[in-house]
Image (cartoon, rainbow, N blue to C red):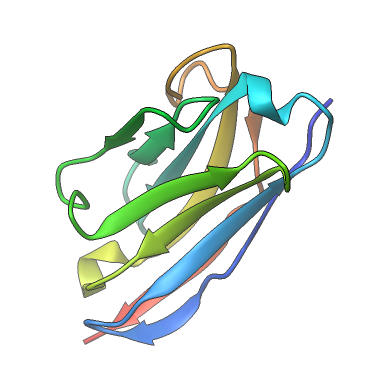
Length: 123
């Protein structure tokens, strides 16, 4: 059983940056694709970015491409989401997810979820 713990959320002004971290327990982190999802008030949870187990392949939702960067450090069992040029539309609870032996993560097939971290971008 793996545990995912997100951190790094907070309040930032538009145009600013935040870096989210997701620390995973367990010794098989390197076998999991990792992803970030977000849920804004009144909306469904949506895909943001994902990274393959080795970090060689990354995926981004269109509106964050070029602004957000997902990365991972398998030695530290941690995945990151660097968020730059933030806008109020990025305000949401951000969730980390893991999926075993896949190159990406989908909301319906993820094996584990974190508890979420709030990101608020003020205008």
